[in-house]
Length: 151
Image 1 (cartoon, rainbow, N blue to C red):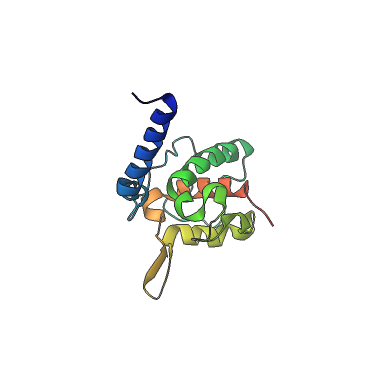
Image 2 (image 1 turned 90 degrees about the vertical axis):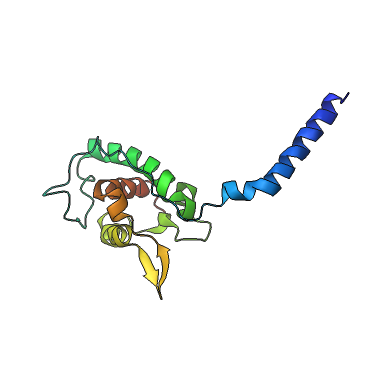
């Protein structure tokens, strides 16, 4: 019969064996499908929700901006953090989004990258997220990123 200490050691060892033999499949993400974002609590973007704006439309109303930030935090976690890092702190894979220009100064660059992605020499550095997630989600993420800004 194993002692309590021996049982714990056996559990830890079996966990490590499992993690090293099968865990690589769990942690590797490969091609990632964008996670849906519920933007139903945000007002529609005028004039038609399809014309991409170059300025965050949610920043003008403090109540809407707060809702957008909350939605954006969740949307960022599900769609951006795997490359740009938790809390927008990059580990080096992609740009650290805390250093985007704050407010309107960074809006146009941000939304262009969100909508169209980034590629060079045929290599995709950021997939286009605009069609998959939509403009409302894009501006919600941008609203949350404003709360993480650092100089």
